[in-house]
Length: 181
Image (cartoon, rainbow, N blue to C red; front, side, top):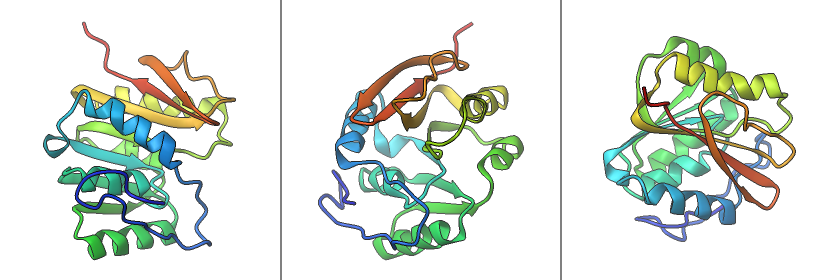
């Protein structure tokens, strides 16, 4: 995996093979960040990375200047790897070892961007629980964005506050925003 842009552009990060992850491809990550770049100044936002895995998405935000990044994953190996990598690169990434759903039920902090990359094997109910918890617990700022990465075989268009999706190979990013009253 490599960092696409910013301070650490072109730096490669090698994750241990034992981690239970499926990192976002460089092509898909670059496309995602091109979309986000049109709406946000990276140094002005806060980011929550759910099912963080290797921390791939968080490193990209940090490289582009984001100063408030929180990674949540329930795997100790993933959290340990993210913590070590963030320290090595002096990146402002906080790590939390927790079940993502329990974490979302208990926090009250708002974020500008919440990125979620759950296992592709989740069923529709598990995928739909993410936007339900995010929006019912008011975890996004007024102009915030929830992005869920999933396989092309999963359709989230009926989920709460769904706006649109973009496909990149076998991966899809579904975008969600607060509804306006």
